[in-house]
Amino acid sequence: MAKRYVVGALMGALMLVVTGCPSGDDNPVPPPGDAGTENPTPDAGLPPDDAGTPGDAGTPGDMTVKEGDACTTTASCMAGLYCAESKCAPLHIAVTVGPRTGPALTPSYAVVVPFNKPVSPTRLSEDPATTNKFPRWNPTGTAVAFVEIAGDNTVSLVSRGIPFAAAQATTSLTTGAVDAANTTDFSYMEWEPSNTIAWSRSFVDPVTSRTSTTGIWAYTSPGPAAAVTSSGVFPSWASDGASFVYSANNLGLQRRALSETASSSVPGASTTAEQPLHNKANGVVLYLDAKGQEETTILAPLTGLYTLDTAAAAPTPNEIALPRDEGNPTIEGQIKSYIANHTWAPGGTHVAYVRVFYFKPITGDAYLCSGANCGGQQGNVVFVRRIDPATGAAVGDEVKFADEATLPSFSPDGQFLAYVSGSQLKIQKIDPATGNPVAGSLISHDWRNENQRVLSNRGDDHRPRWQPR
Image 1 (cartoon, rainbow, N blue to C red):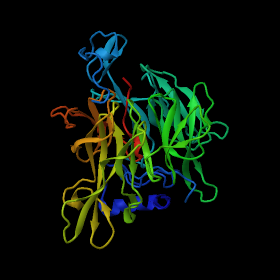
Image 2: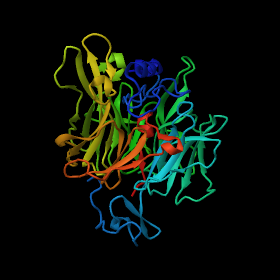
Image 3: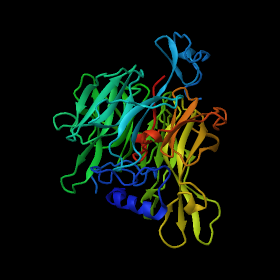
């Protein structure tokens, strides 16, 4: 698995030459300092580094109170709203944006915006001398943590409370210094539904000089930050907020409780399983598994999507979406696809994911699709599939939700799906019975006039994050 990252930056550059710019306009080359630990293309869905080697929430309450009307509980507010200061208000979405022109991906800013109001977003840091990214909500939706990088490249984890006010101070949580979090970045960071923030530690390997990412660290107020595991990436909190699953190289899915001193393997998952995600309702885990299959010319693991009911007596994986040949081959070759950037509806009733399309010629190297080079087939397409929340099994067929799109994210009430398309944040209402987008419901946040684009090159790190409801 390590070889995908050794030449990640090189392949990113080659993709741009061979296929043209992928969906959106994010630069496919990893930013300086990340030495190939990122996806080599914005949305190709390569897994995180594990170094060492070179319907949803249902319909709570009556949900009848409109935006701006008086409320006593969030359960009474309509879909997409929450009760704030005794009135129903729109949920916010947090993303990382970067400039549309200038040096690639620098500087970046963590921002928030009401999901249903295409207005200028609010920067979480009011210090123009800093770069910041990776906003994450606390369990109550009253604060956002994010990574802040000062002019001297000092990396810190800070938070800001809401409602936002001008000249509002941020709270310092920990720094990346050796005597604190001991990391060069806060990768694959997660906060809600836990009171603890977890992330994967990044460091410069003294032998290879590469930046590697492995080992789960955590911060619980008032601190300090501390190591929880020595290896692994991609922590995902269970609904209890006290335990998480993660993936480790050659071990597959692991589970760890903060109160324990050792991790345990998740029964039923193979050693090649990776990127596990809990939903907020039960013990069913969603994850990717390439089972050793890889398209070597694009350095892509041919991942499929699976669920696993960890509470079952003898857990057996459910196949949700698998790599496949797309139609009949031609004399030139065949379009194929694999799965990336998966996510749960909070209640476990739906999953969304990206089907990544590439072309495998009869002779020569495979390449990612970008539309024009694959007869109009876009490289990244968001699909939705219904799930039986009791077992994790798929219900019905997958539904194509959005073309030329990536990083889907369900609202906490499961009524909307946000995603990134053309470097813009987009939100669309979902029909929970079918998984189809509701016609006429698309909301687009276009910040081109402000020279801002929503970033997607870091995969789950850049997924839009909804304010908890």
